[in-house]
Image (cartoon, rainbow, N blue to C red; front, side):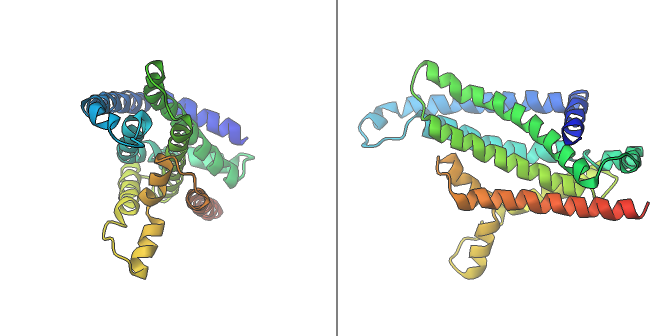
Length: 249
């Protein structure tokens, strides 16, 4: 049943012009960024030949492209997740889901995995740009795979947080604004720096501090655990919220 809901969610997304617009605009912007990074690489190529252990195209082209992709998708993800549950409530179809022989957990997980499947398609399209470099040079496929994994975990976290905030309101616009505010806060929460304990806490809950090592090709269990706990926490909150709403109907 989870797969059925996920497939229905993915199908409904592609019936909307929003999904196609997100795919087209993000690819257009990232293509421009990608070619700009190539220009920068060629402009410093002579300097790189004189450097010991000089960074390669994976570090100077692929990783920056994925990093900028994460910023762009931070801005557009709330537009995609805002309708997951709030639109169901506004259209009255959420009551139909509650009355069907489907558990709340299956509803939440189906919605979540439907969103993740869309993100996998998006990441697959993004990955074609750095992979195209293999026609003329060598890529560090391990670093690229770590970066793509980091981007997938980040977007899955966006989906989980957006799903929860979408469950709190019947207004998709409110859901989008609140999701963007939460994600932006978690993105910049460690900007104060410093070494005291409070800054260490902010550093630990910052999304960027756990994404950056993966973009550099460093797969650390702490970063994987962070994203896993982030996703599980917001999915659990969504399930509890829908359970409470189901009981009041």
